[in-house]
Each structure stands twice: as structure tokens, then as C-alpha cells.
Length: 516
Image (cartoon, rainbow, N blue to C red; front, top):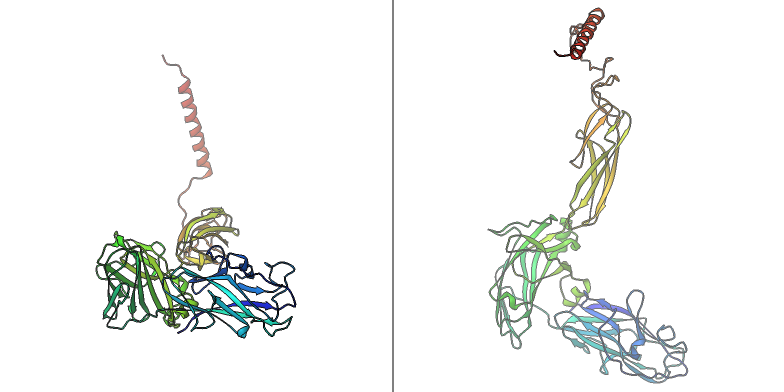
């Protein structure tokens, strides 16, 4: 079976004289650790004197170094005595944090001079392994055989590898399967490619139940349900029904959330037991790498949503299972494997987080300019989606694009961009950024006497009419001069002004005449 593997550093040196006092260090799980196999395995120096022979380097990789180069050892330490046998228990610890059992062993190319041990027994190959249960820690020691060696010899190898594999491989026939003997009795039936019926009985208090789904179709074979795990089960019996579909279920609603995720497939999980008697459920599903590539989906953007009783959709999230864990569990490397945790049963949607860049605010300054000047439109862009994205926002003038800027934003991030354009002709211009209204810009005096008339030209282009000498637009139809409306001559104007003056004076006299 494929295994998870971590290659680490080992250095041991022999010296001409000196001795080591080896004591047993107590094993604890705390502090920094070298993790791998999807964080299911953690390796860290043991808590005790012999733990000084191991340390985490700058890359958080554990180093076993019994030589003068070890920074944890005294300055006068020179190495291991030649022609001697030596051992040290409790040099480092391995902790297994998954919810299954795993076989763990350590390999290296240093021959028989160095042996890794637990409780004095070798764990140097698959046949001599230590089996770890969920959240179990093992203390690893080291045995050194320097007989026949001379001072200055380097023992061991440059690297050693910690290997692990699941102790109980999973397999579920297409029709049905059951397990029992010891612990819960589970049964899985497969009425169709897209449906599974799960049943478990004889469950111990606070037990964990694992239902293998054997690649139940969610979107054909492109997306499949692989397993459902129930943890903290306090019911004596549980029954679960799972159905998959690439489309929303009948009488159900499509995925709809504020971050506008794109649905990939749907999963309905019904249960026949007291839900309060189960702490959590882990949904394990996978997708074809080829299908994801064809759809342009980054596995890191794949997530899981749950529909509430009110019909709303809430994101539960999903984690990509690491390559080490995939190999350790013997899973297909042609697929990307995911896991998602939930405390409720319902309808779920496998979805892709996508960016959603929107213009939320715009301003234009100044709001009025002279022909030939520039105006700046500032637009605030927000990514309200669930994934990082990049978009080009365009400034339009009366619907015509005149400037653009590219914006790259992480989820919930905002940025304000400035878009600048020059306006050559007088007029009123309607501005917008990415379709969002940015207001009206007044250029010059569209009705003034500057000879420009209604000629409009933004950024040096335009199709406005050519202004006449009196400020009015001239047409290209009509054969003769245009007859002007009637007007008042200067002589008539003078008489009219005199009459107005007399009337005003009369009004003033009337206002000054005392009343009798």
C-alpha cells in the first residue's frame, strides 16, 4: 500500500574519548512540531534530557544530531564513543492525530549502525512497525552500534524517513457490505450510483462510525462521495441515507449566497436518529483532477455549503487532503480529495468560491471643467466574493469607453482607482464606471458664446455638431438665409426707456403724496 513519508536529517559522529549518560525522557505533546500527512502525523523533540539530541530546524523539520554541530549540546561535546554500544530512549515523539489506526516505521540507508526503537524494539521496516491509534503518541529512541568503528567515522545517513499507512484499509463493494466482529456493526447498501443507505448498530458510547460510500456519484464520476464519518456517537443505532445530484433537488432551491459561489454538485443527507446524539459529521468527497482542470477550478477554491431549515445557505468550508495523507490512505492520486466538517445534517452543495468585484462608490472631480482640461473619476471596487480575483474596470462617457484600470483583490478587500480623461469640447457628459453611474460632468458652457455650441469631444474624440459664429449650431439643409424674428430698433428703444422712466417717477410721486 502507498505510504506517507517524511524525509528528515540524521547526523552521528564517533569520537576518540568521552562518554554519554542516557536517560529516559518523559513524552509530552506540546509546542512546535514537524507535521505532515495532512497534519495527521506530528514529530517533535521529546521532553527530557535525550530530547536535546533532536531539534526543529528553520524549516520546522526535525533533526536528529548526535554530533558537535547540535546547538542543544554542550560546547565540549564531541560525539559517540567508538567501539561501543549506546542507546538513548525518548529522543523524539511521533503523534498520530487522525481518527483511524496507522502503522508507522522509520527507514534510513545507514546500515545496522543506527536503529530507531520504541520500548527497545526496532521499528526499522514495515514488518517491524508500531501501530498508533487516534491521538496516540509514541516515544522514539535510538540505538547505536559503534563496534569496530574508529574515531572520526560518520555513522548513519544524511536522511531518514518516517513512513506511515492506514492500518485498516477501506473497501466497500458496489452492492452492499457489513462489518462487525468487534465494535459497531455497519452496513452499506448501494441502490444506485448516486444513492447510499448506511446503517450501524451495537455502537459504544461516544464511538466513531465510518461509512464508506465507494465513490457515490454527485456529478457522475467527476465528483463523488467517498465516506461519511460520525464522531461522538451516543446513539445505539444510526441510519443515514445519502443522495447525490449535479443539479438542485426537486422541491429544493439552488445554491444562493452573498459571495455568489458556483455550485458543482449537491448532496442530501437524511438521518433516522437523534441528531443531538452525534457530535459531528465529516464529509469526505473527491473530484477528478482532469475534470477540475477542464473547468478551470483551483482545488483550493472548492468548498461545501449547507442549507439551513430556513432555506439559507451557509458555508462550512472544505480542506484539500494533502499528498502524504493520500498516499498513506492508499487513495487515488488521479483525484483531489476533500474533507468538510459539519454538526448538522441537511442538503449540501459542493461549490467553487469565485471572485465578485463590484464598484461600490464613485466620485468625479472637478464636476465642471473648461474644454481641454482633464477630469478624474475615482471608483471604489470591492471583492464581495469568496476567492481572490482580478478585473479591469472601465470609465465610459455617454456609453463610450475612454479609460480603464486593472484591480486585483482578495476576498473582502477594497481598493480605490482613479480614471482620468481629457474633454476637448463643451457639453454635459454622463459618466459611469463598470456600469455604475458616476454622475454628470459639465465641460465649458454648452449654451455660451464661445463658438463651440454643442460640439462634444471627450479625450480628443467626438461626433458633436460644429458650432456656428453666433454660438448656434448650423445645419446643412435650407437654401437661403434664415429670417430672424422681429426686433425693436434703437429709436423705438429710446422712447420705450423714456416711458418707463416716467412711469417709475409717477409711482414715486404717488407714494410721496400724503393721504387726506
